[in-house]
Length: 538
Image (cartoon, rainbow, N blue to C red; front, side):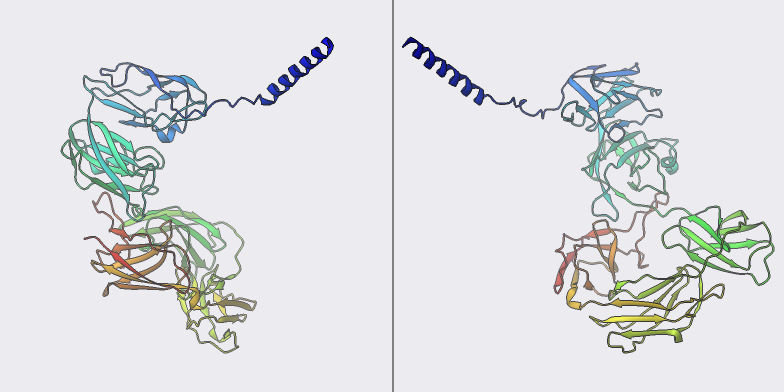
């Protein structure tokens, strides 16, 4: 009996042990840390005056690291030599700022870290930390607020630098090209408003830059600029709604040294506007010398074609643009000649606003239309016109397009003749089709409160123009045969009535022409006609 009791007791203990093991779970590790690090001490203290040292330490309650410092950290006023901020790659319970620049007397400095300080485990950011000190007796406490918009885009760029230049006796408008500002801030990654803090009383020029190379000066070729007309006075204009409109200037013309690019082709690169650019050969010309100039469709380059070949090694060219004259020495090189190649720029679907277009790699001199045959899908002959664009070296063939039709182009050998009297040797065959008009959508825009003329555009989400109309005499604009997709609708106030958008110019004090976007519009669908009321502000 006793033995039976012992066995039963043992069985019970084993069962309890097994149940205990079955209920034992894996540790969860606790809740995820979502709290940012906490500053426990700063040495010297934040907002210290009479700062004399060269190192600042900021202590935290946990290990922190630096993330994306180059983009996030804004120092105002900017320093010529950037400070060393550690830990650069690891983690530490403090951040060290070692100043390597000579600090200005009686000046308030601010280090805006954005969200670059994060904890080591979960990368929780310390939100928009600012460390401020003064080399004088007081901390400047005034500010300038405002907002940034883009001249053409619906939303401005992110990380726009907003700067104040002190309007003292040394100030000139050209200072933005060569000197850093007195104060600076940044719109960061999701905010279009700005606040320049710790400013002293005075008169300033307010500038915005999309500062791509982060050097706090204006690079006209690559960067956008915005400016406040005239000057602002602090504190009187501090709380005003200071609007800065970012725009890309037309680049000032600059001729770049030419190079040999083909047997009888020289490339002339440039910056700015090519329309008034003239190229002239200096010195002796070969007998019967002729030239043609064609523009690259993407690059800022003109192709200078010539015949016959030169028998000399070098020559000189002048490139002029208005009053600007540049002289270049050119050395000829031996390069294999090109052969004529024709390319159809229109393939597949022929949209109703487009024309069938051919392009050549060598300047064309003539076309023999007797060798061109254009037939529709019923093998009926279709009349066409011919238009030549000499600057881009293209032929267009306008036709009266019918919906749901197929067009077959046949171009026999000898249809096209180039600048060197060579012709296409093969028969060229191309087929394009038009869709049914029911596959497209249409939009009628009623321009309310409109001050004509206006350039009305349908653009994509990048601001690229897909369709454009010019409203000069009527406030009603029709867009027909539109591809089904999402568009944005905008209007440009064509102030000088030249039919195109004119950007601004900082040195001339010219703001860009106004651009207004409508409220978001519904996506265009096939077989649908839309009517949109677009109300413009005064």
